[in-house]
Image 1: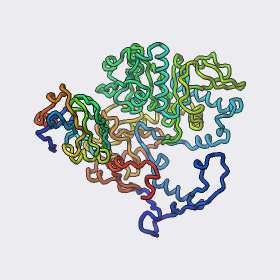
Image 2: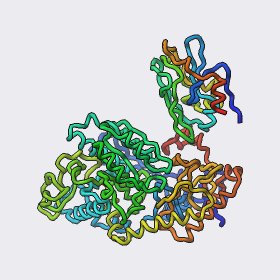
Image 3: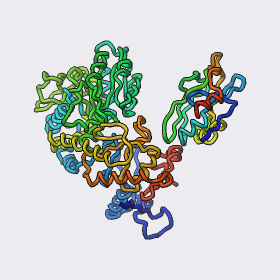
Length: 127
Length: 495
């Protein structure tokens, strides 16, 4: 089974992705992660203005199989949260790299972005 | 083996007037207006009450049919591992229904001496069974017992000036989820201890985890894989050596009943799951009981009140101020009590059933129950085709569904007229099928269970994915059920 791993993202070993758009980064979980989890039924996210830290927990994702912690690929301040996931947690399954995004984060100076895996490196980890 | 569960439909559910539909029509309500004289404010009272317009036979059939669409331990085997779904002997219900058991909690101690005597007797039974010095009957459930035990440990460390510094509770990764939750609820940092390769506590890992910050180590023995923690003496030494206390989760006491006692292994605090070990009904949201036992040095912290023979304040584990009676038994407050954890003296009628069960079985009967629980689990495991990676187990075993999905295996087992085991936990075993037949089942029933396991083991994924087909409710859409929570009957009204 092959999973979608877009080349324009960076990845954390724990299967979260970061999409950098000039200092503001979108965060979500990978296609592989959503497939492992199965049907997602609940996503708990921080609020706007909250701080998140590279490689530390920022929320929880609950599927019919498991409850898992979410780890932030980057350090910074949350500027937007995907409210659609409250009523439609299935977006994480249907479109993990698109409508299933979770946070937008304004990066700190020491954001940890450079420590993330490239798509190529992440592909090796998953396969 | 062919099983079909009853599937009654109510009139009004689908097309009208077909032969398989049954009365009553619960929507046919009878509204009566009654005059109410009440001191309560008008906005808290009502003078109309809507009740279904039914006669007794209709009502009796309604509930009988509902019960036919259900599955319980009175319907067939129910090997839900760790939960210990064992048969509740009906005589304990008879005893609890006796008029003498129906005492109001506010009655004077002198007028309920029999009640207090039974409680004192049960405290004593449980203390002897667990090898503990003192018991509180007050906690209303197993998890409430855990929480109470942690409060006792906290009070002990506070008394020794270490309340602030001992801020960690160690819990093995195979433990029941309630251990983690109870520790967190009591304000502790939870240190998760990875299991060793043999599925038991890894002594080196425990040594590394134990420190001057350790308040308590919570352990289930046998553990959730059914394995006896045979290094228990070393475990106790490590924890006590670090100044911590050792907590016994009574979930698997059935395997040891009448043979070994947590107190003798070095445990300081334990709770008893009376619904598992002493055949009281599982709570299911209703009343339960999770008595807590402790060693002598912790007795002063137990919840108040406890019961003792009048004038027994000097005896070991029974120190504290009496509430004052002139009867044979009296309530008293342990000297440094953590306070109350439930109303009055606990869930009394559950305690009556517990007492009745222990008294009826006696020492030999209890030892026989643990022997048969272990024998049944081992016999069943020897008959199923699925692999059982961890041995030797005791009263329960964890098989692996291998390439099959354990949840699908469970759903398919329903089609063979048996309740499935607990699935996907503990996570140490891939696609876990955690199975506990309990001591109550006969060889014939165990063979029936084994046949259900083995038939499912030989079936393809497609068959499993469509199951169940012979039950009242067919395959449930778990994702929709979790995404669209409807948690009360009002949420269904108007659908």
